[in-house]
Amino acid sequence: MVANSLGKDSCVVWDLAKRVSPHIRGFIVTTRFKPPETKQFMRESVGRYPELKVFENPEPIPDRLYETDPDRCCDVLKVEPTRQAIEDLGVGCWVTGLRCTEGRTRTDFREVEQRDEGLIKLNPILIWQEREIWQYLALYRVPVNPLYAEGYRSLGCAPCSRVTGGGDERGGRWIGTSKCGGECGIHTRPLIDYQI
Ligand code: SF4
Image (cartoon, rainbow, N blue to C red; front, side, top):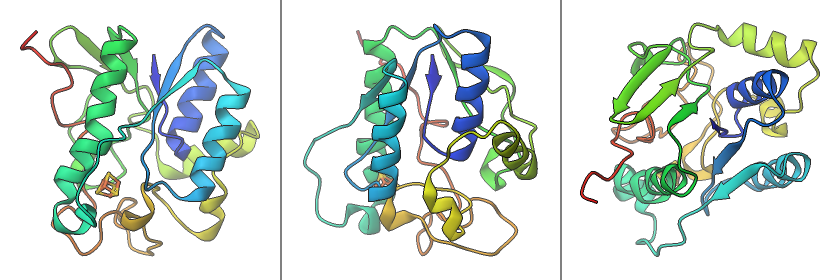
């Protein structure tokens, strides 16, 4: 099961997975705050690959929670639907586009991990550089979100993604908050509810 964030790295992993087997499935976690371009790209991706299942949490949250408590906002809108996807789809092993060269919070991951009991995570492009991602996408003509053409290096929700020119690939995420350049929690928070 591939976790497809619709970002450039996920586009590579999804393309690689489809070359391994057309039967490999995937899921997308989206939120009400994704940019219109990302929502359109998601519709196109699902149209092309109906085996990509979309998860979104419609739960009400306070206005501008992404400013007052972005950790909580990500927890509700991103981590919770990821947990739901893993439970609903019966995932025992998932594959991600996580890369250890993306930023300060991604240096310690491994290619094969088990952070939650019974849930193995594969990070097959962990050591790829940003340049190699773009080389792959260009060589194999893989479609990407058009927002990359505007200069974004890492894409998330609209209020929390900016174009930046610094050295950190994820430096444009959550600018102005303690979470700047950090994580939404999908790769750091528990994903299985052990209270069952
Ligand atoms: S990226 Fe921003 S808007 Fe999206 S869930 Fe996280 S805090 Fe909320």
